[in-house]
Image (tube, rainbow, N blue to C red; front, top):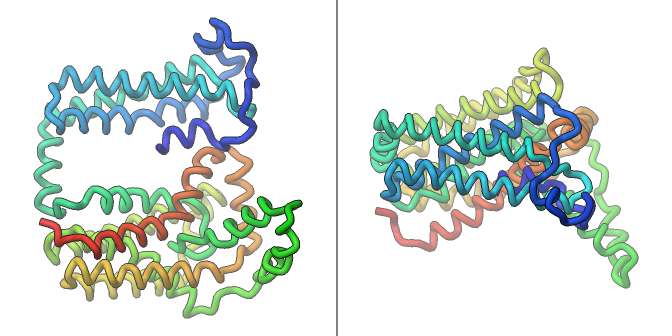
Length: 355
């Protein structure tokens, strides 16, 4: 899904834009120029896919040789189909080189997966997962792996994800313009459209603490053993610090990478770690219930945070610069991650206890 999104973003202007449907169309054109950043991105994008498809096939019982060909075929066919679809998007340029780079990246990923399998690391991971996590854990683990990706999108408050209500309102207002209902939305569209007052210090600290506590409680719903939960809390704090620092460096330059680390941020991270460690013995269902409260509060608070000038400048850099495709992915993950976890936790609470 991430590969498809990055390949077809921004999903607008569909139509036959790149010439007639002839043999050249099927063969894909050779690019008129080669950009180093695009070359590296196209090569690296399919490495994880090659590794993961190979590992999934091996763990499903396929032989190593069959898994290699399956991973290569799926990756190559998917890349080719996406390049073909780019013919219909005016903002995308289909390229035979991109397809070759994608396939080569998948091949590198398959080589990594094959090496891991030969070293016995895939079997080791399977055993580690069975010791650490409950059987009903795939969705939770997927959401936990997506959490750092959402942190790459610039946030008004450190670790504050889920600021989607304003953008949703903008989309609704835009969709209803020049319709019989447009007069009904004027006051709603203008109400509270500009927030300039910063969040109070307690609220800002709370957002950071809740932003760290949310993935910890999600992990508690599938993690076996209090000491393992404690280690995951420390790991989550480290990942949050590293990812937010990386995002700041990408936006404002390496010299400003640690500018986000303020006394308020430290207080929020410290509070989040302390609360999470105090809850390591809670039942998985209790963790799910607390997670619902934490996420609801986080979304309510972050929705009141203003978009300061530095935040707006950062968004503009993502939307118009080289991060445009990464921006599209990270943006949606950052907006929707809390809501996806809310839905998952509601489903978990209504399910039977995992084995």
